[in-house]
Length: 486
Ligand SMILES: Cc1ncc(COP(=O)(O)O)c(C=O)c1O
Image 1 (cartoon, rainbow, N blue to C red):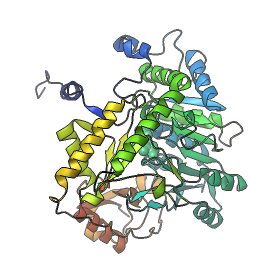
Image 2 (cartoon, rainbow, N blue to C red; image 1 turned 90 degrees about the vertical axis):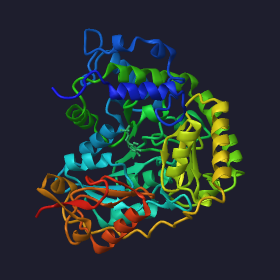
Image 3 (cartoon, rainbow, N blue to C red; image 1 turned 30 degrees about the horizontal axis):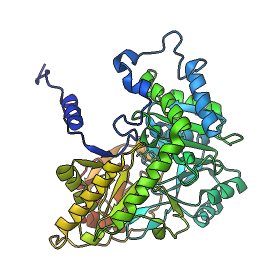
Image 4 (spheres, rainbow, N blue to C red; image 1 turned 60 degrees about the horizontal axis):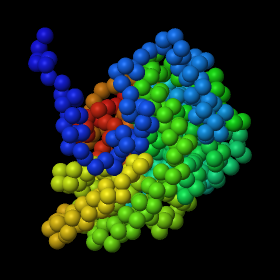
């Protein structure tokens, strides 16, 4: 045995974090327990951490309390069936792709900024991805939705597309015209699958964009832990009444992918979140939205900062937004979102959900305090006045992205192939075995099975030099890239 085993580094780090009493503007959306059902907050969690004992049902074949809880969630969303998930929306997206796209030669249309969980679905199903370019919101430079015209183009050019996946809303809370996407999918008789990781809460306030089921998606997956008040990893998957996704296929994909020991704490938190949303969702969301809009008005007056609002959304792929998350750009200060996020944490004890090269995203938890949001606004004003006149990094426009490369093989074949690492500069003409995405705008530049072109190498070198965040590569410095050894 080596090492000191009396140490518990994760436990210590969590104790330290919660002892600091940070202001939380990040997921999970229960805000450190504030919005959790009181019975769950008071519960003896180790005592509730059980397995499939008598009377407690079985997630993989529910016929008792889990079935009842799932039915209640389905009733709340008007779904034909709801599956509880214990591995986040990740597993739900993978199960939907596996359930709809496993036929030989099947293809799926999906946006290039789809979450990395889709790769698991593509590897599992063997489906060929047909990518659609999302629209980029200017100034903030993040990827939002795709247009109906872009979808029509891929559907006309590829008759083997058997499903379409849309992200609704994106990480920054922006939605495209989903009703139009639904209409197009219906005209081709193809199911529309929604990755609604950030949209559990939308239907509970008429002041928020409508959710995917309301607009006619065939199936949707929601991270209830992100914005619905459940514990981290707890999500659910809804099938629409009359939708074109087979319940049995989804159930068998979930049996394949989910743990055989699903956590009762996570499932109880889904049950409790459903109760909270049903009983208090409207009041809490209206209040959260009012507080967020007030904050946005104040942030607008802070020199150098831009807060996302309706005036930035005049693209067909970006038609509306969720005001309960504040997206703030620091470009006017010449400060990066990463630096701003660090200053908020280090100097103000405020933690936001996400930072990129230009922006921060602050997710207001359900039941947020007005004073906490005022503290955030105050901190942003403090950063602005401290930084103004001192920053010399200046604003760098994002490098121009290269076009989509040729697809040489499916992601599944690339994943299963023998692989090797090569220097990025020496990879032209080789087939990538990994996803490399650059933030902003959060779009995959190369996908497994695609040919690495000189333009892609040049873009990645510039992105590396500019300090843009690079995701997905096995080598985080991107000195090397993993390729198929053919
Ligand atoms: C758009 C999107 N889809 C899917 C996921 C995966 O969700 P989960 O963390 O619930 O597995 C995320 C996570 O951030 C996401 O942003």
